[in-house]
Length: 357
Image 1 (cartoon, helix red, strand yellow):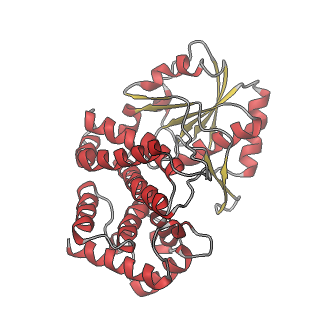
Image 2: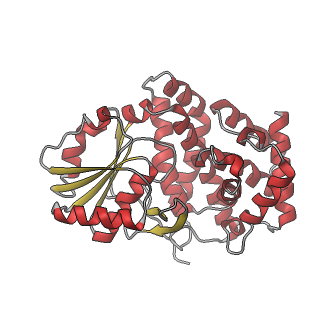
């Protein structure tokens, strides 16, 4: 395999970053069509500076569906757009990303929450009209600009920031699994040394600053710890998962997501428990498991099935394992033999360890 890596073209993060929107966007286009999450409070985008550009904005609600993409593309063409910007959470960002791809226009990603590592990626999740996932779509290009206003992110519910930490926690463990097994990354290529270094730095940043960053976010304090972890969850994890690869932690997430009991849990919260399972699947020693469980506890992430709302473990295991070990699933990117029995043992060990810590 060729070594391959992908990145956003430009990344800007800091307090009040939205005030630089006009000057940053002008590098890319002068007629920007903005797709804005309908749930955003009015004040969030009040700080937008539109100097040097023309900005047309449309508020949207709902998921990234084929119908929504077609509608947004038509409106953007009528506006004469030469670039598309997405303002909001994951589904709105994905809608803008897919719309830009449909029109072959540059995409500007402006996340207003940091609940996952999607803002820097080329991945859009497409839903059907009933709200079910239809497919994952990799668009042609990563964002030309990712603009992250840390003041806006810190004003969002702290649980979303914590969930982003959970998603980022998988970055290194999944990347190293793919490297050791020889599995490809999300581009279909082999990992670069740079991608692996980014993934490792992501993990180190979370462990060093995670608990303090959550405390600062909860208190609405601006801090170096918060900025460092925000960079880890958005930029490092975004680059790390695409250019490093994904494996068991996200496969366990898929299994957990198939349970009605976990539908109230966020993506990153389920991934965080998946990381513990991935470690157990790879026979991590007790000291390593204890380190990760302690980290989850320190930032408020789940460490047991009970933390995820699962009461009947025996019934849940059947569903999780069936979904996580489907043919072609990413769990087979692990460098160890994956069988239903091995996965069950890993889940039970992770759960038991979380319970006793």
